Image (tube, rainbow, N blue to C red; front, side, top):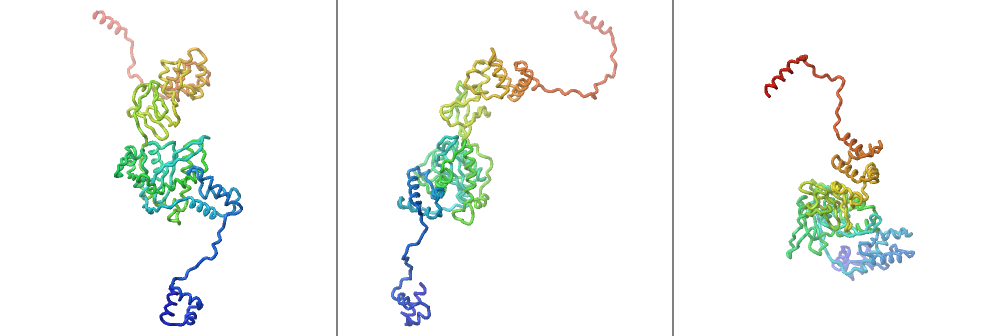
Length: 499
């Protein structure tokens, strides 16, 4: 543009000839004449479209077919362009990823409407953490099922963390935050969330929030500020919204298969560490993990972990059971008919009376099933020994091998129920370890009768008297005692006088 202006100045203003200008600039006279006729800057017009690598050998039709198949699936199960490229490679495609990416992009644009504009957000180190839920499908123990996945993302370093749960209940939310902050080894200043009932109990017309008391206790414990998004405004936490889609393609397509939820969560934790080795989207010369190491200095110390349970008061039934979420859990029989506190964690159920923990069970997510601890019912057997044979808590009771063998021996004979109940009561008095050891000795000595086992238990629990050494010296008398029969006569006389 500057050259055009200079040429026009020389010819049109200073009156120089086209020939002299051509010699000075090295341009042809035709080019100079064109500049004199048209004052617009020179432009390049492409006559032939650029040549790009294309999908060939029918892979374009195959990719179209795969894309159409995905459009019929739920959004969470659709494959990304990377996954589609990997599928084509497995089928013999030898080209690069770029044509596949362009092809998929064009297909998506063809089906998309007009875009919406947003304002980019900036977050300082240690400032904010974003949280959201997603629903995924996994295979646990050979059974396909739905799980809820808690997504966290540090806004500055973009480091992700995910954990899977059976649901989105209050205790799951609390446990997810405890796990996430432990994973990051620090606490940011704010957490940006949606408005679920487990966190926000009320949203007023003026957008004021009333947070759930238990969630607020979590925030107060870690001294974090909860920031709830405007309803239906997911762009306010766009990072974690995008993470849901990205990690769905990386972690849950195809469906992962594990033995249980703990194994799945261990794998997810490792995968989050691996994904942090990707380049940061804004600072392309550094990885997410490297930025996280810098951000860690701006996170507050973690401190003591929050005790993330939901508590309610329940009444113990006459069957020594309490109910929670469609299942029943046993407590010691002495609490039948009383009210106790039930603390529900994400993975366990704890029963408390006063300040004492009276029972603890693994959390179950079945329906209408009773879970027994047989030792809770042993005191009742003292009055009802016959229940040992058909009582529901004692079906498939996994006793130590020696005790199981003795039980089978007793149950064959008459009155064996009573004898084995007495042995169980001894276990409550002295501890299962002592009784198990005594039973093992009884099996070794082939003395399975109850009195013999009781004798062995007494030998184990009685204190051991250490024998005195041979060098021990007993106290010596300083005066040798002498026999005096008159002392007896004196005593007899004194007794007669008193009578």
